[in-house]
Length: 127
Image (cartoon, rainbow, N blue to C red; front, side, top):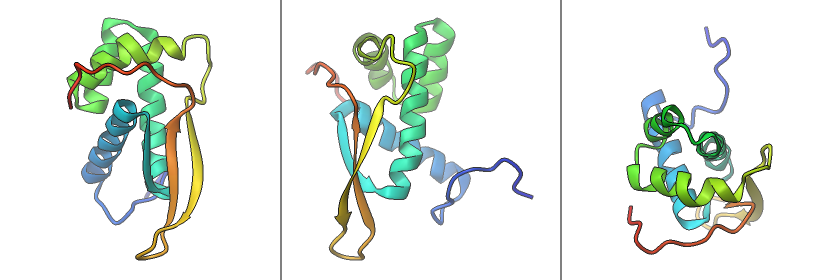
């Protein structure tokens, strides 16, 4: 039974879905905006907003949870140092999804997933 299992499967097993969500969230936090399909953006949005909420807490436990969630230490450090302070005082809604039309090859609905506030760039972080 699939009690309380939310979100689309995207023809992937759960480990692949979780890894894809983490990779998309890392790309969003690194670049500030990404272009992807609508379903993938919904999954990445959940992961990114959870990570930003952990970043706002700023505790050691939250930092370890964020590293486990994102699977990328340099981006997690940037999240806690640069990105989360920008969203301090905001209770949620850290990302914005803008529809940009169908993809040329297969007409999949494409969206632009971006952070709702500009984040200062840091050139010394590489992914």
